[in-house]
Length: 473
Image (cartoon, rainbow, N blue to C red):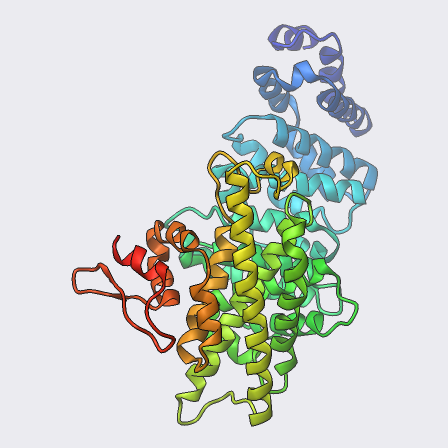
């Protein structure tokens, strides 16, 4: 038998025949020693790690039933060896993964409870490798029970990565069938974080919800209200960190974009008016130092957080206006709150417009090879000098809130400040078809019957240079 194994093995390593002999022994202790030696070989031999033919040979030589038995055992040492052998093959074998490997998935997930920290990490690394392949993700989505993953989510960030990778790759034709399972998992995740630090959950869900295939999005989520409560709890926490603010604003933005008015009715309440006040304060507090952060690791999270803030502000204004038009509104501010909000919003928007002008000047300086922008930002590629791309998400969010506010504002001062913004800022965004209506709304241009922009006079006076240029396009 040993001679046959040595002959069949494509990899000429003298240890392999000995390992094969150990794994084929009749007693479990010897077989376990063989698996341990195999794990060490797989983890420490770069040449073997690149040899797909030998890897497949070795996987076929392993007793898969013995692996399953070890995964179910209460002995942590034995279970750890089995987990890491499967993890090594999952990471090293090319796609498509063998069915015999994927069939280990149910026992592997159940082995999470209980398990050592090392085994837990290895299991989650294995799941990441599985869901990164179509056949592996299909097997994961068909699992009957994700409970061990959900229960460990508060302490294992890799759990969120597994779910994110899997849910964003649900194949067409299976999305509706998987939707209920995703809904149930999200309900379990929110429940698991009750009384825990929910910042990681909000960050991950904020990143994932808006990217889910439409047919995978839960339709009537019971977890929405407790998740909004997490957002409020974080926002009202005086010791919240910048990372925490990023997480709850990211999550709030995703919920507003996904569930619209239903989220508004929970997120924006008269009792929770402080929430939108804090959002506006964060915008104003962040603007003065945001530009100076460019080219540093702190810029992207700060910029994206302010972008989320601006979207939340925009959605609040739209919700406020919508409720004002209803005979029986479910949300109304008191007269004092309206005045307070208007004052705070105007101050915030002045800051936003001023920042947009400074931001565009910095972009123009970099495109011209000026020194206003550090070389670090060029190295990082934040605004690539060769193509001069701007931070479109931020600019769109800023113009978005202006497009909602300006038509309802009686004063001319803010409008004049918007008119004074560089024409090229609007022109560059106007070149992107999906943003053309936004630009027209902000600069108060109307569209003629043939679809071309038509300049109009506004309360503030005649059209700006931006009107003339875009109207000629």
